[in-house]
Amino acid sequence: MELAVLLALLGAARAFSSCHSLDLEAARRKRIEAVRGQILSKLRLTTPPSDPPPGNAFPIPEEIRALYNSTQELLRQRQRLQPPDDPQEYYAKELHRIPMEPPGEGQELGSAGRRGGREE
Image (cartoon, rainbow, N blue to C red):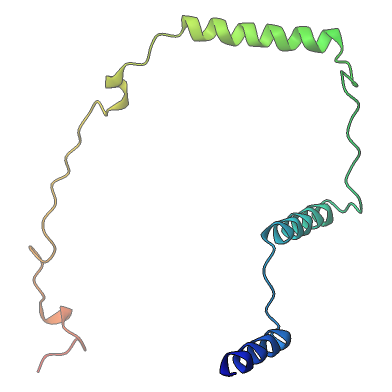
């Protein structure tokens, strides 16, 4: 009898509960959509742009391609001709030492150095 009452109360308690199980996949999808919306908002777009067609939609002119290739070749040649870095080049070559007295030495306060500037 007590068990039946306890089960009835437990069932009633579940009916009043506002807690639901969390669907992590649904939460993940909502978060992705929120981020997507923020990106579109920053780009001032209302919908995502359409995907470009496959292949080379914008052919590169031959002059530009030749200029790019010649620049790449020139950079490779410079790299080959450049001597390897010497580790000693990293460090300083000269050392300059400046002798300094510790603060307070060599300084004596006379009567003019006192506060107020008058002697008593």
